[in-house]
Structure formats: structure tokens, C-alpha cells
Image (cartoon, rainbow, N blue to C red):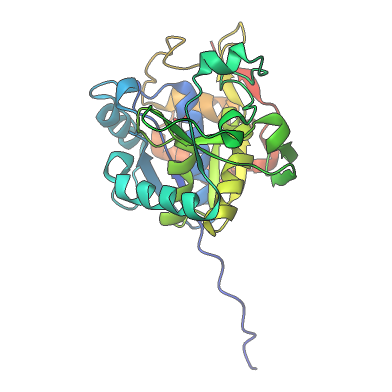
Length: 306
Ligand code: GLU
């Protein structure tokens, strides 16, 4: 019998991309574990990318602490860890391309000016940009940020957990910053450049970045790079609802089965109680056999276990 030719499965590549602003906490463990399981259960390659792009926010030693904790859980990057601090030439190149092709323009407005101009605040990300410097370029000689102009069209995508999403960048975000006034490249640009560079096919991360996804899709279109599949998990919060983060004093997670078990429960996986005390290898065996995205609660946030 002639064997039927089957298309080779698409090589799956995923990543965990922490910012080294503090130790790995329960919330970041959830994101790391979800991306790891999603990639491993597809037979793919899992990468760690250190998003050390913003020196003022970094905590000395945090990057190494994060990598050591991941390794203690058994999660190690399949390829050398990529450090964003060593990728500035690539961001510079893409920023130049955006200047040439996407009409990226200089902007001298400070947050305070924008607020004073009555722009609506969106979350903690600052005001919706009213187009001030797009209409009238700032006089030369002052420090400027660089913004990408956005069209008045809806960007839509389907998230594997949160379902269909849509956002009108012009109305809900405005022209957004790709290079900051202090010269640093913005997260939105760096993440798109590096996801493309690393051939990432599956972006798995916390829902606090769901809102950023349409901006990233827009940059992917402008730079002519592929769009990955998206999966945003609920983020872990304090009982009062604040997101667990370095700012809210989240503790370093202890690298043991109880923590991994709690992260699996947090993502709705029906893991037997007794595995909380089993060796890590046994828990990973269970997780790799039973991981089901459809069980992840379709919520933006949920309280972390006490
Ligand atoms: N570095 C970002 C953070 O720690 C995550 C970026 C991403 O996964 O796209 O929040």
C-alpha cells in the first residue's frame, strides 16, 4: 500500500518572557508553566527570553534568580536565553523601518501635557493619544518619543482562552510609543521584533497583556512578520483584587511540588490532591498527560491560593 503523505506538523515554538524586576512569584510561575505545558504537549521548543530592556526598573540579581527558580522546577530553555539588552541593534533597525514605512513620528508630549489636554486615561498605560504631534511636529531640539500612527479600524483575533477579541486602536489606544523619550525601546516593539526573530508560534502569557495584543498585531503587520497564536491565562491577584506583582509585594515562589500543584489548580486542571506532595517529576508526568486548555477558566483574573 502506498503510504499517504501527511503534512509535517507545524513546528511549535513558545516562550516565557519575564522582566527581571523581582523574583519569580506565583503569578509568573503560572505564565511560565502554562507556556511550558502548551509547547511541550505539542512537541515544541520552549524558550526563555529575559526582557531586561528597562534598566531603571530592574532589580540586580533578579534575572539569575528567575532562571535558577525555573531550573529548580525543571523548566529550562531549549536554546540559550535571549537577553533583550543585547538586541538593541535589531530594535533600532525595526524602528528605522517603521519610520520609513509606517509614518512613525516624533512626539514631545509628556503624560502631564496629555492629561492636561483632557485625554482619557486607559488603564495604567496613560492617556489615549489625541494626535497632537502627528498634526503639528514638535520644534527640533527637544527630547522626543516616537509613535506609530494607527488607523481607525478594528483589529480582531481569537484568544485560545479568552475567546474572540476586538479593539479599535485609534479609538481605544491612539498612536502608541515604540521608542521612549529616554531613548529606550518600548516593550511593544521589542516583543514583536523578538517573537519574530525567535520564530514564536504560540504566545502564552497573563491576561494583563491581552490589551497589548492588538498593538502587537498591528506592528507585526507593519513589519511584515507572522502573527502567532495567542493564549492569555487569568492573572493571579491578592484577595482584594490587585494583581500579584513586585509592586504589590509578591513573595518569591518556592520551587516545590506544592507550588506547581497550586499553579495547576489555579488554571483549572483537575490534579489529584495527593500529587501536591509527590516528587516534581511525577507531577510533571501528570501535567504533561492531562493538560487541557479548555479547562482554563475564561477569566481575566482570579485570587491566588492563600
Ligand atoms: N516581560 C513581560 C512581563 O514580564 C511579558 C512579556 C510577554 O510575555 O509578552 O510582564
